[in-house]
Amino acid sequence: MTEDTGRTPAAIAMVLGGMAVYGFVDNFVRLAAPEGSLWQFHLMRSALAMTLILAAALLLRQSLRPQRTSAVLLRSAVATISMVIYFACLGLLPIAQVVAGLFTAPIFVVLYEVAFFGLRIGPRRILAVLVGFVGIVVALRPGSGEVTWLTLLPVVAGALYGAGNVVTRRFCATEGTLTLLLGFFGGMATWGALGLVVVGMLGIAAPEGPAGWPLRGWGTPDDAFLLVVVLQSVGSIAGVGLSIRAYQLADATTVAVFENTLLVFATAWAAILWGEVPTGRTLAGLSLIAGAGVLISLRTDAPQPLRSPATGADAEPLE
Image (cartoon, rainbow, N blue to C red):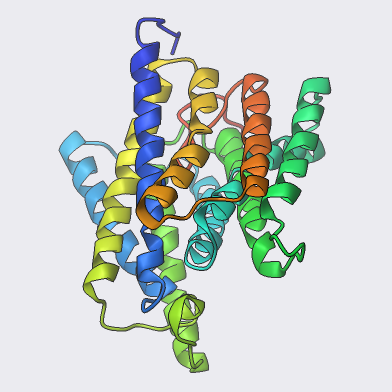
């Protein structure tokens, strides 16, 4: 869509609203982690989200049939693995640290495009990648100076999310929004069910507190767990809708730059809700990562909405 400058303020307001919603609902995952199961969370959340998507498709009379089934399945697989890791980390780490890891996705998108699709990049993108990786080291390195596998998991989520964005852009750009959403939440429900089966078969004795979040099987959900499931289901769909509408109203580069405010909203909500104020080191790292994302967005022809499907028209066949 050609940018209409009169619509740009509305688009900016929408993307800011979407990021504020994401930052808010993601903060509440910590309430589900002490007693709940990561896999039960994904299964219940996805079931509710899929119900809402099916209702929306019926109301809007939209087909959910994919044009390229293999491409949608590939996108769903990569994106959902990323989100399984992301939500596992939300129950175990400070949210600023987790969101910082997810926001390395634009850096990995550039690397994938160069490595697998022969993208030629200029000095600005090279600088953005370098700045972003410095930000990763600064933000994700704990105060003790010790880097563990757990602190690196958010970066793994970002790398996989970046791969999902590349698949979306190159192979799924002509797919319908609701189709991709249904594929995504269908994948999340599948991981949730598989996780419950595996945990049940292994009979692992989950430790108390958040450490047991990814190791618990099915249980009787308490009020906090159900609240988080509902907030995540409704909030995710609301955030996706606001982001996609913003991309329809204004230039994609403008919207992509403002998506970086998720780092601000997630950190601010954590401070307001839980008194979780990041250290100066973490804030410096977040700033570097966000700056790298802005530089990359300004040099990307077709940025993709954060955690939402592409709606462009530059798709390539999946071989």
